[in-house]
Length: 251
Image (cartoon, rainbow, N blue to C red):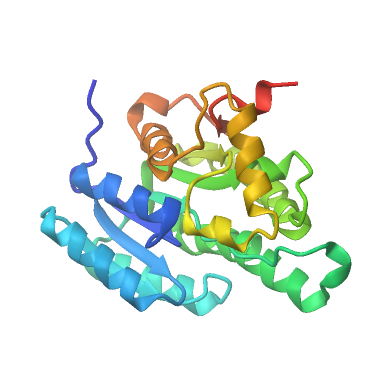
């Protein structure tokens, strides 16, 4: 059975690098029209747009910090002017400070939660009246939402918060026939790993403990996002689907 998203309108936050990029390309290959948000890296955004257009797809880039309401406003404006509605929202943008918690102060707390939680939920609020019946909202989380990981206190807390918030959204949006689910990834091979002070230990331990004997790749996450965004997942609601090669089942 093939997944087709021809002419579906998809909003992806943090969609130009790593997991977000893989999700963007996967949707583009299936015919979706993309509105992709990014924060800083203009070059990566341009490369993504060019690649999508080479595939014959449409990609509108929206630069801005998703924590700022103005960014959600920009995304809404694109939808209103070009599409009159949105079918799928993927909440992938994430940031955070990877340090011991006592090495951080309130500005680090605020930065992490405002991007990873408040901004993402505000985007859904901003677009809720534009989401078509049968629409999907997919949040991207990580095992740090449930497990304690060194240097991951703030990011892990924010992931736990977004998972909880999206479960509540699933309940509230059910009458509108909108599905809300979460994809929780294990250790993924992206550039983000280089920011972990314990990167080598983290990667080695993850490979050792994973029954499928490799790290998760961005495309592994993207496949599950596409499934949850399809009509085949219409009766999956408010769930967190773990993509970790079996890491979390090992005692």
